[in-house]
Length: 167
Image 1 (tube, rainbow, N blue to C red):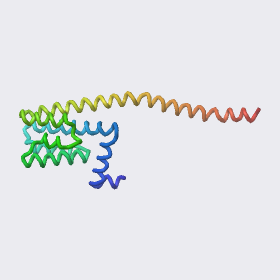
Image 2: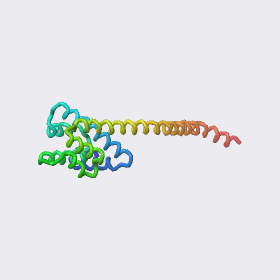
Image 3: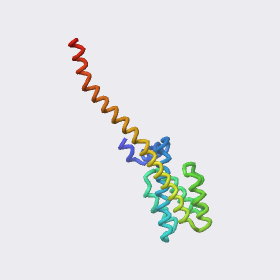
Image 4: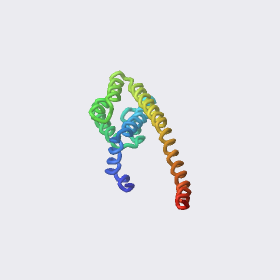
């Protein structure tokens, strides 16, 4: 598994698999897009050209599938296309993000649009983490109860067996 994760095809497969997981996939997607949006927005706001900013922001991501989508959008942008419209072609990138980027490009406020996108995705991921933590607490209590119950039964079972043998 580790050897496969070191190859490009292995990382791509693993990234694709992670994004297809029921709950974790959407969480990872939002976290990655939030990180990318925040990084790209800050770079553009500080005067770096969009092409150079995308080159800098892509390595900040961990998921290879998302990186490939963004690299393709970068190529489309180099050829004179729109970054937002290129992202809209992808099935993976949410319509919310691509539409906000299109509006930001047309209005000349791309950094503000990216900041809004990042804020939205960061808020969603924070809420998801809180929800998961709240669901994990009762599960941990149940597991601890089962462990304690197992220990009690393991300690009392020999006593009951000895009592049964004595009678």
